[in-house]
Length: 116
Image 1: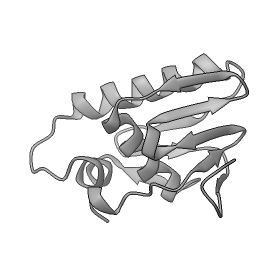
Image 2 (image 1 turned 180 degrees about the horizontal axis):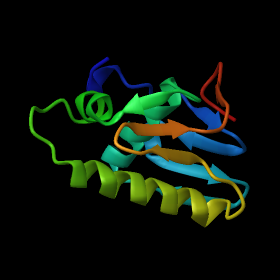
Image 3 (image 1 turned 180 degrees about the vertical axis):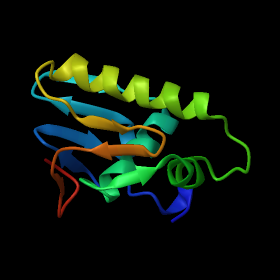
């Protein structure tokens, strides 16, 4: 799956709605605009919910370039966690698997149509 193959269909992670085409996550009246790369990483994690996604695979799928530093990925994961916390302070969404990668902890449900 390359960057152009990432979903643009809306989906939910737990109780948070995700609109990849608008780069926004929201729940009720709370929404957070994400940088496009942060959304790309979220889409890769969502495609493998509950499974560990290796750091190299995340980089390959979200960046599609040969040399991206681990620091870039770490920064994107940090921004994604911060965005989730802005909407839901009680739930842990992403788990770090030391020296391997990351896992999205909640169920992902893709919408059948383009609205929630």
